[in-house]
View 1 (cartoon, rainbow, N blue to C red):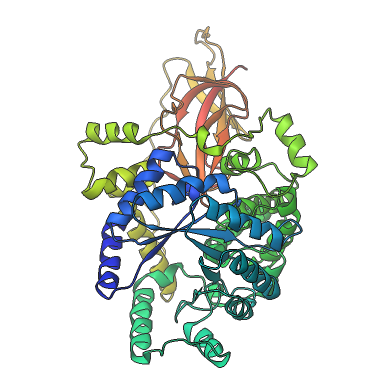
View 2 (tube, rainbow, N blue to C red):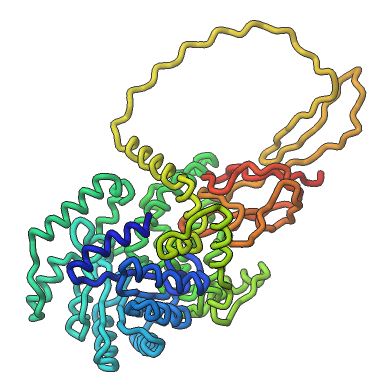
Length: 564
């Protein structure tokens, strides 16, 4: 339960007189898609009551409109509002661009500024120039530098930030420092002290105790989800600029998609790929995709969007298909302006694709697109007999993460996690001895053939299509029935299937007629929702999956009855 965890986490810090801080994504709150304003307001109220003091708010597009309510709601709840500039390196992300953004954040109510170098690709000299400019314009505003160590710049960037007026440097501690995390406390501490800064001494016994406790947690089960590559720094990421915070999920996604892709390649007589080959193709494709998607800063959730589009492009091209044939719903929202204003212009091929698919661009305030929903979820909780929880924290969780909360309440989430942990532990164990072959079964006694009494229905499959036909034989009257044509709707990728995604959305039911191109459900994969559409018109004859079912690529989801 994340709410119990936050209360337990903040209590000892408060006892020691230490402030605690949370990170939130502005319009997206603490999820991957836009959040209604009333749910955002409740989030700050709940987190403050749970013991969080500082709200670090960032917008993945650096659109100040998406953070105005974050600063307002944080301060209303009694928290300190910190505005984070999402740093990256591109032709449109200049020092002047970020200085003006800091001015706007402070004008809107931000009390502190964070330089959020989430991919660690901001160049050290630029970090120094930016820090100095903000300090000169806002001498009383606290400045905090946050940089991941992934490509290797962050230690130098931390020194440049400190020399030019930063007050706080974010660091990590073993065994979670370095790699895709932060530079270690010991390194940054020694560097700053040598440079003449006043920094408090480190209690090495306490450091080693924290190190031991964290390693114990990793050894218990968390390590099963940490790819060893995440412990390494990687200069190959300077080009694509992907953030350290998403490299864990990227490697998991890569492993999953590589398995599906290689299955397809082998089935079609092609050479399978290694993980390194797929990784390099992905990095190159990110460099191609990023400018054409308008240079969104590569931070959650937009780093996932760019990575997902790039990965889908790589997979589709490996199968002989074209780019841009698999763009998920969340990414389309970003492209069309429903998440905010992109820093750069879209590529012509993306604009053309949007027009071809009849999509409309939006230029207003993104928050206006997402009406309040707390009353809706409160009503659903009352219907189910669920309590709103202490300080309405369960209502908040349900409104913020509807399917995940339902899985939590039903026990599905726990069962799924425990099963997955056991599966991963089993894979780590030594391979079991081969199972001896079962003895051959005794032949069944012959039985006389049974002659059917009348015409029989048979299903005949040709490729991915299924035909239902009636068969008669000599001496039997012919049926007047007409042949019906069955068509299978298959999963375009693996993930978790849902019939609906948003409150009030009506699911497809057996007996419904669907048109070609109509959405019939979603597959959640790589932290985003991919719309599944019908590739043919027809009537839904069978639905073979339920909400929350895990599906593999090419699994049959529904069967349509279509005209012959």
